[in-house]
Each structure stands twice: as C-alpha cells, then as structure tokens.
Image 1 (cartoon, rainbow, N blue to C red):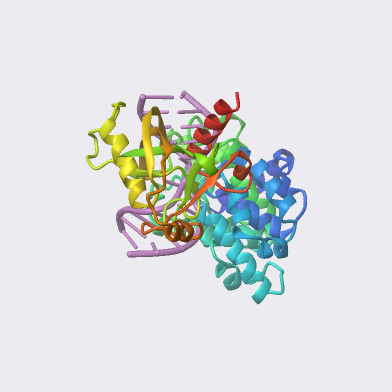
Image 2: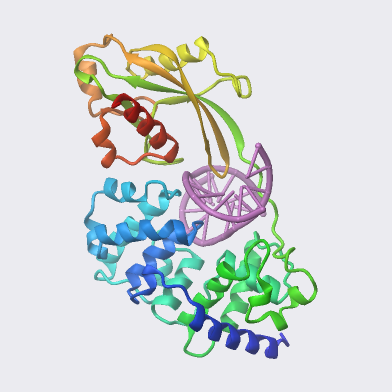
Length: 384
DNA sequence: AAGACGGGGAT
DNA sequence: ATCCCAGTCTT
C-alpha cells in the first residue's frame, strides 16, 4: 500500500483528537483487564448507553473474576436480563471459571490464551490485548470497519469474513508505536461519535481532509453491507395462568431449555399457532384458547381457559413473535399425587421446568423483556 | 458460508 | 411503523 502519508496523518490526528474528546466511561476509569473484558462482552451488538447501568450493577455484584466464577449461574443471567444475547453471559461465566483454573484468576495476556476464552473472538481478543495490555493488536468492530471503509474508500462487503481480515491487517498497520490502547479506542470512539452510520458529522472529523470516502462523496454509502433477511413472523398463543387453592395469587411460569433461543430464561407458557398467518392480527378465539389449555394439559397442568387478555410482540434478529395472551385459571389436578410431586423439580417432555411464582420471585428469575412487561402489568393490576 | 442468537435507538 | 446496528458460536 502506498498510502503512507494518508495513514500517518490518520493515526496522528485521530489519536490527538481522542485524547481531547474521549468519553468518561465506567470501564475507562481503571485499566483493570477484568473490567475491559466484561465491558467488551457487553458492548457486543449493544450501545454504550444501554451497557453502562448493566456494567455498574455487574461489577458491583461481581467485583472480581473469582466472584463471577463462584456465583450461581442464575444470578449472572438475572444481571444480564434485558441486555439480550444471553449466551454472552453464560460464556462469560464459563470463561471466568476457565481463568480461575488455567490462569490463576488473572486475565491472560497471551494472544492464544485470550482467544481461547469462551465468548472471545477476533474482535474481543484484540480489544482486551490492546486496551488492557497495550499490545499492538487490531480490534476491528463495526465502528472500525465503517471508519476505515470510508477513509480508505474500501468497497468490500463488511459482512464477509475476508473483509474483516483485510481490515485487521490495515488496522494493525495504523497503530502508532506504543499507543495501541488509546489508538484502538480512538478508532471506535470516532465511529461512535463522529463517523456515524447515518449522517456522519464530517465537519467536525479530525481526519476529514484526507478521507477518500468524503472527498468522493461516498460517506453516506459506505460501508458496503449486504442487507440482512427480515425476521420470519411467528404467531404464538400464550397463557397467563392464575393459581387457585394453594397457588392463590400466583402465576404459572416455566424455564426454557438449557440451549437455543433464550436458554434458561423464564417465560409464560406459550406455543406456536399451527397455521402461520391464520391468527395474525385477529384476537378472539376459543380455538386458540383451547389449544393452549390442551398444550398445558400435555405438560401436566390442568387449566381452565377464561378470556383473551391482550396481544404482545417481541422481535429477535431472526424471528418476530406475535403473541395472543389468554387468561386461564388453575383447575383441579387431574394427575396422581405422585406425578404432581414429580413435577416439582422435573422437566416436562418438552424440556420445560414449571413453577408458580409471586411478584418477589421476579427479583431472582430472569425473564425476556416481553414476559417481564406482561408479568409486571399483571401483578400491578392485581395489586390495585 | 450461512444461520442462530436480543434488544434498543433513530427517523 | 420501518429501518438500522453487527460479534461469536454452531452447523
């Protein structure tokens, strides 16, 4: 590459800009590798403003790697509630246990060791090594690819793995001697504050004069990125089952299986409506109401369906749920007492663990946002 | 190489 | 209401 002047200018000006404009963020107040690590995991696919309160609570509850390693997984998941991509939380704790066993409780500073930690890929490994240990390793995330693709007018599709590798080579060449920590953060900071996805603030950009994308009028059309497929719609039927007798005032919830979507999170019982599209925006339905009751019966719970309560929606990156929620009441047990006893701790055929809960149980059990809102609304209404 | 895996913010 | 954002693991 013959861009040596453009590169030198970029690195010098960007670093200078960062030292004057960097944000005061909780994980920047110390150079604790554990803090850097936790923040980088949380920041994957997640905005800084969202992460800050989660980071504070997480560090308060798990001040050291050992605290995290020794905690019940349930506690970790609860602190991650609402942040999304929950495998990050489970991988982070698994990695903390790995660090206790293999590295004496200290975050390793060897590239292969860092890369081998669960949940740590090329980006996060580079971020830990550079930010925490000031090693000259590239840390290429979406911000960095956006900045580099514009400044150097790189038109490769950033969704391709080969593009990330190319960007890493470039990013590594740009690191000023001995300044990997500040420079890599500067690159990401520019992407977050100035070189934004839409309407970049070129007039305040420290490297605008030599930005090829800007000069060519391409800043709005870079980076090149293949569009993601829209999430597929799913119609689902859910039940809010209110307990009777010994379960008076409680609601029936269940824990999802240990793998897959929302693994180990708690939820209201629900099932997919058999004919996709059929129930899309309709609300009424004895058939649907009966189906969820039938589903619960198969799972070992006899409930009386009462009425439609409300709709709810939840969008994942690959699925869009359209939920019809029905009020049900716990009915007389049709099961033998031994079968009932079994269910206290047993998973059902579909891999769910059921439990009757009251409001205070929600302090320890982790729910996806859609069910959190439904349950909070229900308990608030009941308590009025 | 492609799909699974959340949730929030901007417009 | 519709678009955008984009790390790691699994297949």
